[in-house]
Image 1: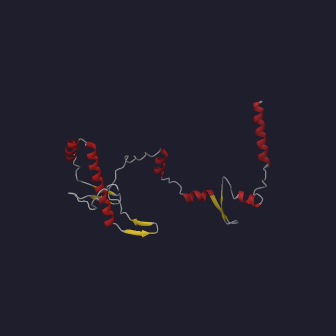
Image 2: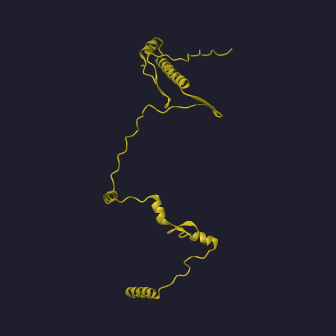
Image 3: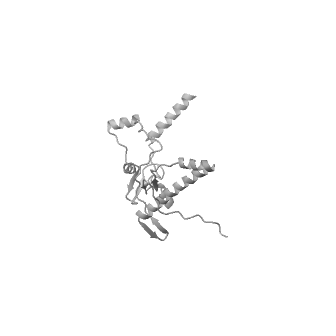
Length: 190
């Protein structure tokens, strides 16, 4: 023998005051007040107060969900794709509050105040790139002017090319002055 099945509930939901919907948030607002006084009167006769209240809350929640589904299916366009049936939600109309207040703007630093007074603006990305790289017409590429791989040295090494400044002229007078200054320093320490 099959267990007794629950009766099917009505698909249409009628309330004294109709629901208001925000379909973008999947929200159904029920302005009708919950009446717990009728539940407590019925429960006092049977002695089961909590189960009657939970049954009423479950029925109210079911009515709200049913009304929301009815509204979604009756007002929004449905589209069928290979992955299934899709429902396009509209934009959100209910403003939601922030969890925390808006952050206060930070006071400008001394440098920012000075820069604003003098009209100094930060360099753009293109300006920084133009300063840090230069165009080599011989190779047709942009090369760094300082730092790692300066002047495309790494690429030239990999290709087996000779370093551009492999021979540096030494100024004999400057070299002699540096040597004498070093010797003076050693004599002072001794």
